[in-house]
Length: 256
Image (cartoon, rainbow, N blue to C red; front, side):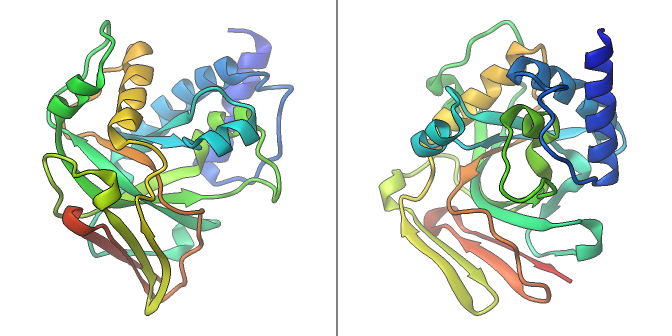
């Protein structure tokens, strides 16, 4: 490992473990390959103290966001098992520097996904046990206004877990039949039809092929977060956040 790679790993590890704020670091994370190499090493250590790897997330998976960021494919990151909460969770704001949320569709794997295979959408449909609503939890700690992609990738794209809905369906209905409604207390902040950033099957397929392609076995029960239905949002302390997703059910949590 080069001196630069060692410095990149140690810098990202310190920031992720200690919730440190960070600026763009192109001198350490020159491109996405360097970023993912650091992400793998950092999260192998971080996850060991947070219940292991419990899931995976996709980010900026819409054509406008990809164009804005100058990327060809979406970004991906890990979710630690100890930071995956269930419907109705009570979260403490003191556990985060800058808590933000994104409402998403989550896929829960029903079988292990192994390396040395390229998975198709048909494979993914057969492998997912259920699809349910979820909130991704993020701790957005970069300097306002910047999004140097490799630096953000190396820092695991801000993920600090998820809250999962209790229900769900085994087979996804058409996206144009799903209404996404998000409430911050009594205030409705989203009411949209077909607001998923891409086909969730395609999003899950991208996640699976990325991580199995890097030699990871994705275990049955793993959570795949398939992309946000609205812009990243700060929850209001003391209020219940709720995401209703029609036939897929709902998910809620409170932060104090």
